Amino acid sequence: MMHKTFTTVALGCVVTLAAGCASAPPALDRGIAYYHNGHYFFAADEFSEAIRQDPSSSAAHVNRGIARVRLGQVNAAIEDYNRAIQLRADDPAIYFNRGNALVAAGQYGPAIEDFTRAVELSPVYAKAWFNRGTTRAMAGQTETGMQDWLHAIEIEGDPWARAAMR
Image (cartoon, rainbow, N blue to C red; front, side, top):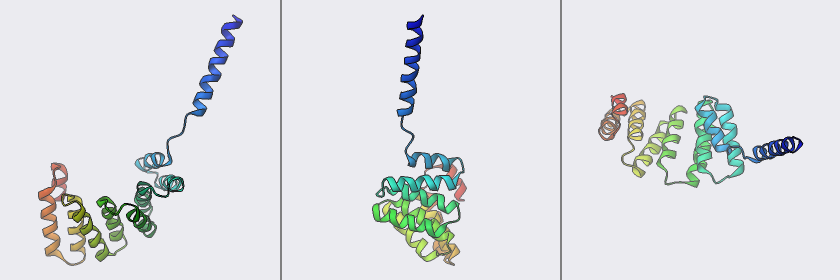
């Protein structure tokens, strides 16, 4: 009986040690989880930690920018996107996200430039075409905005997204 108790206690200690050694999810993953649960402040904090751990992570900079836009910290978000572009200038999604932040900041000209760069890098990026059209319309360029909208609807492969664009 004593031997069985000792084995159980020893096994319990091993399980406890193993659980203590198990690593927590990386900061980037925690940030994404917080973001998806609507906890943007905590998400931004985790993305900041991810940047401290790996300053060359464009994903951490982009995600912090997205969270900061949700928090109303548009200028800080634009800075995050600027850094992400320095790290990955070939990623159309970064230009798309910075374009959205620039629209929120009322900077339509630079936003149009970013959406243009996104569609140059990915000509089938329907959301970038659509947002460029919207921004052009907001800037008083309704004719070219309409052309962008029609093109976005034409190239969008998802019927639900296409219907939302109409």
